[in-house]
Length: 521
Ligand code: FAD
Ligand code: SF4
Image (cartoon, rainbow, N blue to C red; front, side, top):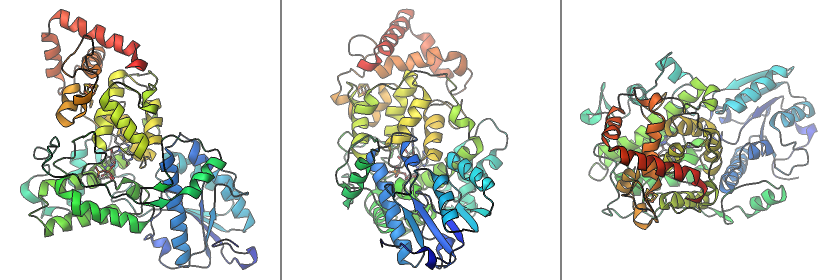
């Protein structure tokens, strides 16, 4: 028999508990003590590998982390049935498999942890309604706010703003607080933070693991799972709690002292700069957000000479603020969020999002890096790939599928809110107060991409003019009826109106030509 297998006659369990691939939280109250009446089940499902085309490292990381988690639970004495992708009884479909197991083992009660994805939430709800046995859904004990928190907080408002939600979370959790006031007297240190990388602090080599995934790679080939991106036989991403904690410690020791300062910087020979790369461990729940925050604030309290308040606040804001807020927005606005397309953009995604073959150096570098590593940091996603897609009018459906496939941490609740909401303004301003778009100026200010580019960052039109420049003005010009009333954009329209007619005409023509030739840029 393989590890953890058992005979039907041995089985005393009458309760089946489902653990999904992003629910690898060993400290959940379910696992406090083994119970012979409970059988846990984990499954590698074809349905999860095909809803978009995923990066190969993402599929490998999920399966490897699931297998490691199953092994740990069994070692702790829990009874667990693990269905591999190639298991003869695996239909590839979540609820079909569950039904089979419930019948086979004459299960009397089915329990599951609340999924973070709307799609799975609906699937499991419907499944439970159809079952003739008792069922229940249990909280994952992972997030710091409830599913409903954002909806309750903002009520029926048309715009939600992260900043006020974040302040409430700081007060509620007492993180970086002195009584009712923020430490240092300010909630936000963005002015001190967000510099271009100036070389003052050496960039630490990213901590990469060497997890042998050759057997899983073969399995994906054998099962003809279609993926994108590249991998070797060694996976660099953490696949268990021990590795996740090592990555957290490494981040705190070497990167946190510069996190805030360079959080928006981009550099073409550095793929993660001072970022934590903890999103996979967090999103699979191998790490709890509060333990990450506690470790960071404790390190700050002990080493204030090296880790300043703006660095640690910048980091806490991402997890206590953005991460919780995005999850709340997701549950407040699904499923409509997945259909929102405020600008009615319909253009297909250009081929270079899949192969990196473009003369625009910023896009080329970020996409190539994403294909190599299944990772790009926030500003690379927001201000390079997202920025270009919004300026060019790419269909948010196509873009969602791309972001949901390519990144190691991509799970819909956090991908779609960031893509449709923050990056594409497809929600009409529910999340962002204005579209995150820029010309070459911002990209040049925050990176070294423009130095090696075929295009001229200073030119708005003419041969070799940077496409971001004319597309930027073209975007605002074509969407004027929808944006003119936004008070944060008025100044920009005044600048556009002050330009000479001939300059405006040349910019429009340049942008239109680039849009026609978009596959050749
Ligand atoms: P760090 O920069 O080290 O930040 C620390 C942690 O803060 C992250 O691990 C993450 O958990 C959290 N965080 C930071 N920014 C955000 C944010 N905007 N929303 C939610 N949490 C945040 N993040 C995902 O986890 N999954 C996604 O699928 C995803 N898709 C995105 C798509 C687009 C278009 C954009 C603009 C952003 C997306 N993000 C996504 C948010 C962010 O880019 C990633 O969380 C971050 O780059 C992960 O790298 P890191 O762990 O090194 O983060
Ligand atoms: Fe990107 Fe334009 Fe800079 Fe080239 S010049 S790297 S296309 S912003």
